[in-house]
Structures are given as structure tokens and as C-alpha cells.
Length: 333
Ligand code: CP3
Image 1 (cartoon, rainbow, N blue to C red):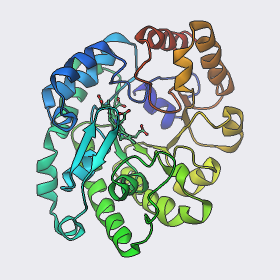
Image 2 (image 1 turned 90 degrees about the vertical axis):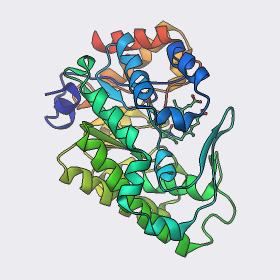
Image 3 (image 1 turned 180 degrees about the vertical axis):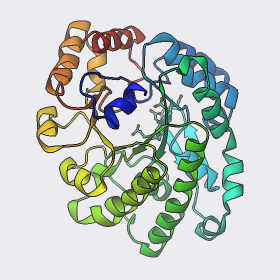
């Protein structure tokens, strides 16, 4: 059994597997080299040879326990024929939504449009480097995708003023997302993904009263779907105010915590396996600080099933040498 499955399924507390959110990305010079020659990010995600190579780059350097497939949560709206572009220094920009077209889109057309992602998952999961390691597939949570689809760009701190105005549109988008997220998850699993992570990066934007409709209910539906396929599911409701309540209602197999939550409180409040937490900015300091902070997490979770990771994606300015040091600190603990 792979280390991550041992932690999530067997609740093993003796090992601490490690992977890093955005481990395939801009902090690696070998990634930047490929990226320079491939200015179109979407096309790069749909190039099965290059996306496989990029996915495996961090595993060639570091003793990580999983590969996370090089793709993006916004490949889903792209597959639904919403225009998606990535502008350097600005982030994603999305086009208008044609909800009538989306609501009638059929499964085959969607799968065909993003098919190279599944081929890359197959290639990664069967690569020699992947012995005793997990292939992590992922999706954006319905709420976070709704945010990008309606806001048409990152919401940074606030949503568009009239974001919630068209309730009928919101309802219909959520229905479309529920259908196609399940199709996307199923295809990732059928091609070799053996853990699914659900990224709810903008969970922190909502107040308590809006959580049942926008987060709990649609996420429960996805979590139950992944469980029905007998694959463990990790949820990352970034900056949600109440992780305890989220876990009790959504019941993922494991939860990834952000760096704003005190790990001691997480240990006290959360019964399921925990992942992550370390502030990515710590990797920009020095080895001594990094070691101290990493060991803090390992000590706190020493009797709790724990997967080492960061509290959000690794920053592009990170020195790969610090990642090497972090991985060996965790492995030698
Ligand atoms: O290594 C991995 O973790 C796998 C690949 C991965 C990417 N995006 C690649 C990527 C994953 C899991 C994601 C998830 C994702 N994408 C999320 C959820 C996690 C989070 O960060 O909160 C979100 C919100 C997105 C949407 C997205 N994609 C944004 C906001 C951006 C711009 C970020 C920026 O700093 O410019 C992206 C682009 C993106 N996705 C890059 C990568 C490696 C950078 C692309 C580049 O310019 O080279």
C-alpha cells in the first residue's frame, strides 16, 4: 500500500508522506524552460508529453510520495467551452458564460476537449518513477469554480458587486458543475489517479449562512461520488472559518489545512487524517527556520495520521534547494 493510502485508509501515524501543492511549477528552472517555449498555458496542459514530463520533474529531484498531475482547476470551465486564458502577471481571465449551451453539452464533447489530461494521468501513473507513490488527481470545488466562472478573474479579496444577483444562473451553473466534475473525476480515476483532492481555494470568501448552499451541499455530493469509486478524497477548504464543522458535514477522508489555522487547534478539533499547514513563505527564509517550523508540525501531529504539505501552493520564488532540505527533514524525522 502506498504511504498516502496507509495514512488516509489505515490511519497510520508512524509515517509522514510528503507532497507539495504546485510542486510542478515555476520555482523549478526545468519547468520555466519548457514554459518559455510554450506561452499558451492551456495548450501546455493539453500536451500529454510535456504535461507528463512537467508532472514528473519534481519527482526526479526530490523524494516525494506523490505526483500531482500538471493541469489546472480551470480546465473544467475550458472543457465546458467557456473561454479561459492565463495572462502573465495577472492570472486567469475567463469569457462570458453561455449557460444554455453548457446545460446541453454532452459528455463526449467535454471529454474529447480535455482528453490529453487523462492520457497524461495514464502515462504518469504507469511511469517507473511512480512505484509505491500516489498519482493525485484533482478538481476545483463547485464554489471556487463558480467564483471564477462568474467573476471571470481571481476575486482577490472581494467578489463582483452583483455576483449573487442572478440566482437562476447560479443554480444552473452549480448543476452543470456537479455533472461535469463527476465526469472529470471518474475519468481521472479510470486513468490511474488514486487520490483525489478537491481545491476550494475561495471557501474563505463566504459567511456561515451561505456555506450550506454553496459549499456543503455541492461538496458532499462530490465527496460521496469519489467514495463510491473507492478512492480516498482530500478536501482543501482554504481559509474556511470552521474546519471542524466542515469536516463533520462534508466528511472527506482527509482535510488539508491552510497556514492561518493553528495546528494545535486543528489537532484538537479534527478527527480525520490531516494534511498540510506549513506557510509557503517559510521556504523563503533560511534552513534553520524551515527545519524548526517543519518539526513543529511533525511534533504536533506525531500521534495523528498526517501527510506533510504546505498551507497553500509553493511560491514561484522558492529556491529548489529549500524544497530538497524540507523533504529530507520530513523523511529523517
Ligand atoms: O503542481 C501542482 O500542484 C499541479 C498543478 C496545479 C496548477 N494549478 C498548475 C498551475 C494545480 C493543482 C492547480 C490548482 C489551481 N489553479 C487552483 C487551486 C489551488 C490554489 O492555488 O488555490 C487555483 C485557484 C487555480 C487557478 C489558477 N491557475 C490561478 C489563480 C493561476 C495563476 C497563478 C499565478 O500566480 O499566476 C493559475 C496558473 C497556474 N496553474 C500555474 C501553474 C503551474 C502557473 C502558470 C504559469 O504561469 O506558468
